[in-house]
Length: 274
Image 1 (cartoon, rainbow, N blue to C red):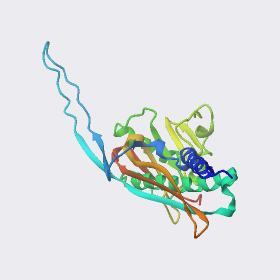
Image 2: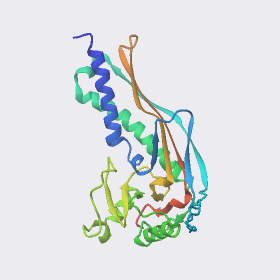
Image 3: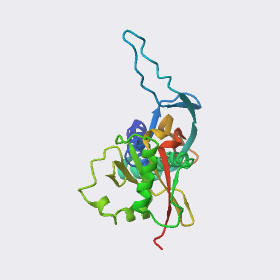
Image 4: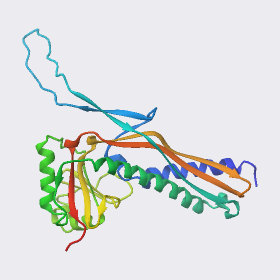
């Protein structure tokens, strides 16, 4: 076997990890305001207030809006996911087995990305429902009303993330399943089911907060949540002779923060139909 096989193995493995993370590792990153290439332990997202338009006299000075800027700091944390691969597993010559391990690491980091985003969402104080019933059309319309009342833009960047049980309840609504109401061309969302209804992209995600039978779902504008990335998924592979195995370490540096409480609504649902 060529002595360069390790180099090929490392490059192919890194490519598999990155591809798996992008395609199936995270469901929510593309639905929020994301900043990459952050240098340092934190970054700042700007929350910009409303501007007011005014008139001016002929040849006068254009009035200044004096927008209010409120910086919101997002702290980054380091996360790791590693595993041992024994030399006798012949991983280097079995592309399917290599992808299994690569995908496992990418999925673990992807789940952590979504956990960070959901944790930021959970800071929201606008609520609909009281956990006494499942997800209903009335609750959805009430949540939409809150966003409209707060002048949250209806610009195609509104998202709703719901659990598996709530997704099934949505499927019982004619408006949600009928092609007359929904759209299916949703290139932003990867790794799961998504539909567009009421100008909102609905995303199925199974990691939302659940306490007993109380499930939190969220309706939000993409700009209300910030996600920061200091290091994308990086893979390091080292040989340990005493173990006769490679140790494969995946790592990333990321964080998430609530930017604008007005742009997100928590929908409190009962997890069962009873």
